[in-house]
Image (cartoon, rainbow, N blue to C red; front, side):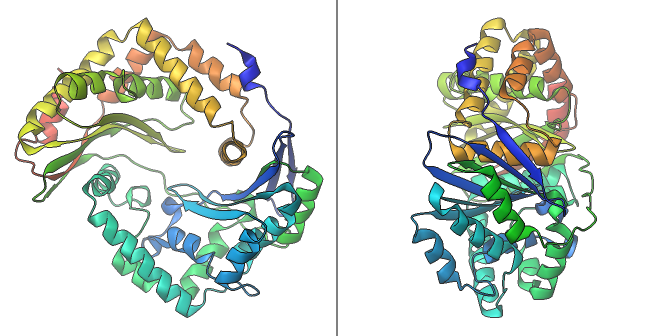
Length: 427
């Protein structure tokens, strides 16, 4: 392939005495700087009484510190033309800011302030709980979101990795400053934090600013989350709706598993684009769904493979029959043309993500947290290119041997039982 498109820029890395890693990637042709602090903590690191706390803390970070009000946080960033954001996932929480290169000191000061000196004012805390409860209600009113929450809970029952990120009204209402500070002290440990910057940045300056903002954070012992143990099963939510939203899943692979890329490629060929098997058969040939997708979600120690779609109640049985047949058939006759196309699509997705400072920032932080090193793009591309038809078919057969998870919401009269689905996958 043309390696001009995957050439690696120089990434400088410094580790502070307390364990926090500082990594920068200078991009000379870019005038802005994107900075972010990534913490290797997400919803799966919460104890039962902390369910939803990672997400609440992410919200509260912008609600005032010991020296800035919520308004001042926003003004300090926007006065220099910047923007600031945060996100919570199952395994990570991130806080990012984008400014002109000349204003990285402002962005770093704000990020350091919200992560080390948040005030957690009781009034702001009460208001933000209300906001999150509205967010929770919105998910409850959105079947195509709710069905995926039900899917995760059914695949990993009674486990932190399977719980919805938002929490529940009961846990959200119970949170107070003491619970928040206990969690932060335990989980926001410098040894599981990466401060990354990309664009118009100077490593020496960023490292010095990081030392000033984060260098006094105490090093604390790192706590590993409970391992995710896939169980499977079914959950049906009967509702009077126009459509049935259905997710069928099976145990997948960790992103550290040697078979990860083959499993990912199998999912893409099955339902990853307009030329995928499911899209062609379900959407284009039979008109059974507006959209259908196959996915492979990897985590650090486990994963999920599955298919999600919505269809009219009268078409549920046919949709399931066609989907199961496509899944079985793909393990037998995936061909070279599909492989070539899927590999090209995966490489485009990989390289597109590296075309912005934000994309490069996320790659740096995630890889350092997960692998302790930056993985060169051509190393990933070479692994994808090396996959054979036999390997991808075998990966599909391995995936289909697992115990199914079936979650659905809406008119479900024609939905088969999960035991029947398991039998159908093995025909």
